Length: 200
Image 1 (cartoon, helix red, strand yellow):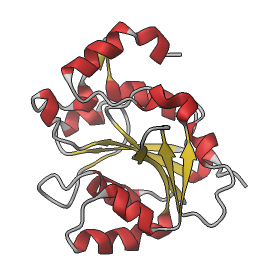
Image 2 (cartoon, helix red, strand yellow):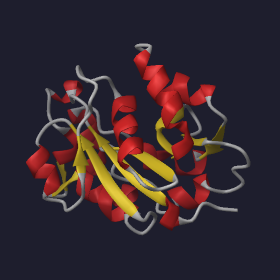
Image 3 (cartoon, helix red, strand yellow):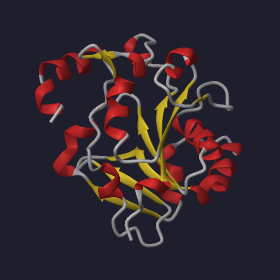
């Protein structure tokens, strides 16, 4: 059976350093006069029961969006898995949907597509037709202890941990543009130039 939205909490992963944008907090970067995180919130709200934000800077600013904000307990910017760990610890939902803050055009049917025919899978990941996109995923609450163990060993690679778990990969090649990351100023300029097609 498909996973019901009421059993899902979404976490927006906004804890990165934004190094390729000169240290800019990418979740707060504005596109069409709206922060990227707000674009994501608008697309997530119809798909999940709750939203939380994982951030390590500008916490008061993120709290203004009206959702719980949590910071990594692992220091030194340990990557997306640190934010995912904290979200799994804080969420009361059976499933956690993860999305990065610099991808404002996630599909309106992301949850619906990920949650079909999951079988015994505990992690369901996006493949955009060219590469695996492990930060777009549904993760079952039962994977918390596995992630804790992985991080305690000093491991940090999101893809490696996820592929070690019972998982499924869903092909989104027909919606590949929905997973574009705004990592550089050139990316931002490109998206602004072609905004109409991305906003569809």
